[in-house]
Image 1 (cartoon, rainbow, N blue to C red):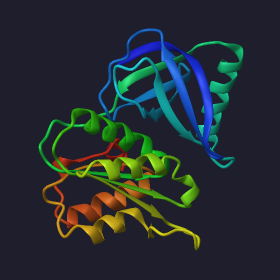
Image 2: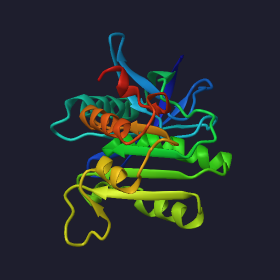
Image 3: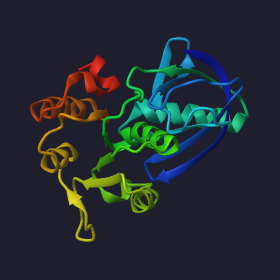
Length: 234
C-alpha cells in the first residue's frame, strides 16, 4: 500500500449521476490493474473507489456514481469538489485489493454492475495493452441505457479486436434499445454452456456479486478462478 497526497485536477460528468475524477499523485503510485484506492476524508473515514486507469500513468482516474440517495459517494464527491475549489490536496491510500488481474492463458470474463464498470475497465485496458491472444468477454449491466457512458468506445474496441467482445445489458430498457435486456449475470448464463475454462472478474453491488458467484459456480466456474473484492464481505 502507498499513501500519498494528490491534487484534484478535474471532476467532470460522465452521466448525470457518474463523475470522472482525475487526480495527480505527488509521488509515484504502484498498483495492479483491478486494484483500488481509498480516499481519506479523515483518519477514520476512508472510502474505497476502483481505479479506472492503468498503472504508470501520470494521473489516477476514478468513476464515482452518486445520487441524492447515496450519501456515501455523494459525501466523497463533495469533499473532492471542495478540495478542488480550494486548490488543496487530498490524501489517498493506493495499491489495495486482492481481485487484481492475474497472469494466465485462460479466456477472461469481466462482469460489471453499474459503476463497478471502472474495475473491469482497468482490467480490459490492461489486457488490450498486453496484446494477449486470449478471448475477453466484458458484460456491463445497468438499469438504464443512459448509464452506458463509454458505450461507443467499447463497441469500437469490439469492432477492431476480434478476441474482445462487449455485451451491454440493460435492466429497464426503453423501446429504442436494440441490445440485451434483463439481469447481466443471467445474460452470461445464457451465453455459456460451461464457465469451466474462464478467469472471472466481478464488480458491482454486493447482492449482484453474490448471486453471480453462486450461479457461476453452478455453471462450472472454479472458485479459485473467480475474483472480486466483494467476496471478502459476502
